[in-house]
Length: 203
Image (cartoon, rainbow, N blue to C red; front, side, top):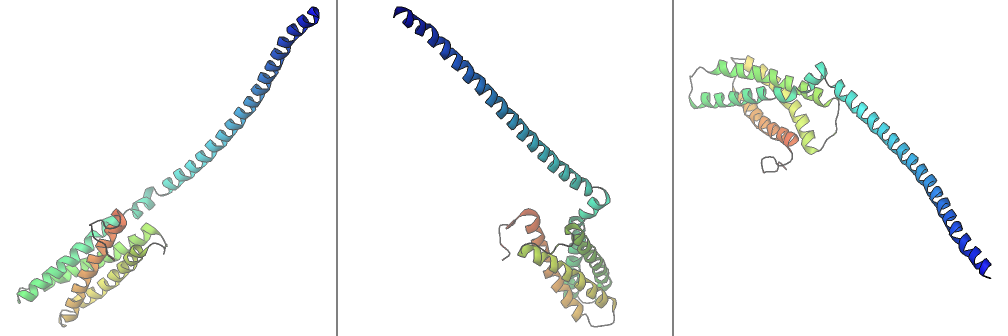
């Protein structure tokens, strides 16, 4: 009995140690496999990220050069028709208040410049967005109001060229243009700086 008990005591630690080593070996195998899977997944993720980054870089590179410059010109060109049409309206008000000032040619020049600037701003606006007709209400009104300003500007240029004709249609067009330009500038600010950028809503 003593010999059997001693044998059991000697064998049990060896078996337990053997099972522990076996379990550790199995755990090591599982851990190694899991690590490989994680590394593979990470490698795949890095590849996807690199691919997306490369696509973004290609898109950025596509907007560089002449195309990038053309797309960025819309905000720069809108200031000219705004200033010129407003000055035409103010000058026309001065002519109404003080007849015989001889400022009619100045109004004509301002209208010509504003019309040319409005057409240029509209063209660069379409270049800026591309042939895209989406967007929210602010974008839609800004887009088509800009087209209306360009067309009305050309009509005003025609009316201004008829020096001998009555100034009433030209005056009506000039003051209507001032209102349209005011709305257009506000909507442009909404699109560039966010809704209610002046603390008021346009709706």
